Amino acid sequence: MAETVMDTKKVMLSGIQPSGELTLGSYLGAIKHWPARAQEFDCYYFMADLHTITVRQNPAELRRRTLTQLAAYMACGLDPKQNVLFIQSHVPAHAQLAWVLNCYTMYGELSRMTQFKDKSLKNADNINAGLFTYPALMAADILLYQADYVPVGEDQKQHVEICRDIATRFNSIYGDVFKVPEPYIPPVGARVMSLTTPTSKMSKSDHDQNGCVYLLEKPEDILRKFKKAVTDSDMEHCVRYAPKEKPGVANLMQIYSAVTGKSFDEIEREFEGKGYGVFKPAVGEVVADCLRPIREETQRLLEDKAYLETVYREGAERASYIANKTLRKVYKKVGFVQM
Ligand code: ATP
Ligand code: LTN
View 1 (cartoon, rainbow, N blue to C red):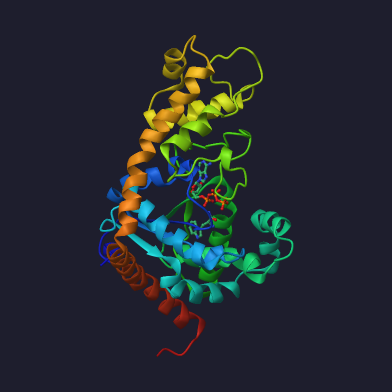
View 2: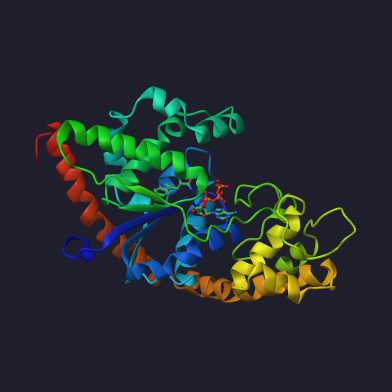
């Protein structure tokens, strides 16, 4: 049972949509940092499957990616005993609270969300109501667990802001029902960029597969992608950290640094006089070595369906216990007759 009720640990919660394969960016920028947090926080991590259907999904693929994401979380070091790992759709309270919060979220607020505007442009034939009210569901995800901190990337900050506004509005009417959460932007904010377009973020929905390294990719494919990575057009061929002039090289240095723990100075010294022909495969090698055990462990876990099922069942039970407490309180406050 989650000890959230009894102990004084603060609560941290985050979710990733199983809308594509996890990338090196999701790993270095997010998941890699999660296991260590269990010591300080009560941690909840979930597969945000309810969110993914705001964009059309292939059902079999969605199921496969959701389970793979759970296995990958564990392979990255998230111990299901120390963290609550669950699948969002297994905890009905998310959808139930989202409905209530929809009634405390304003049309004008939702219209200002940049992600809604971006996704509407990309999916012009399917601008559905779910895509529009998505921030109310995300607010429910967070507020159900009385989360103190929500680790997210820059692009999700606006959704955490609206969640705070919704919580504050609700609390001002009904008293202190919700903890008002803070976004938590990781201190070592590794922002991994595309290997082919180093000015844009490496992202799981990117159509250019060569720019993106996937968490579960074969080592030889990883190496090939790094060898082809865009560096710069000048002839200097020198490994030097200059993000504005040499964004491709800077990105490779960031990745190398995030994986090996070496500083940019150390990396510059290590590759002095060696050129990109040596540097690029070296980055590929360390990434492939770092991801190899994760890939193997994910595959092993995926073969153990019974264990995965135990994990997501227990996760849903632990999550539901806390989520239902908040939901009951909300139902009571708004005036629903209690069963
Ligand atoms: P999508 O393409 O569906 O928008 P995404 O690949 O951008 O997805 P998210 O699911 O939005 O990834 O992100 C999951 C987590 O991983 C977030 O905390 C986000 O900040 C982090 N993350 C994702 N991509 C990167 C990246 N390239 N660099 C650093 N962190 C990243
Ligand atoms: N919207 C987020 C995923 C997400 C999330 C959450 C993150 C859904 N619910 C709650 C943190 C907290 C995304 O698309 N990256």
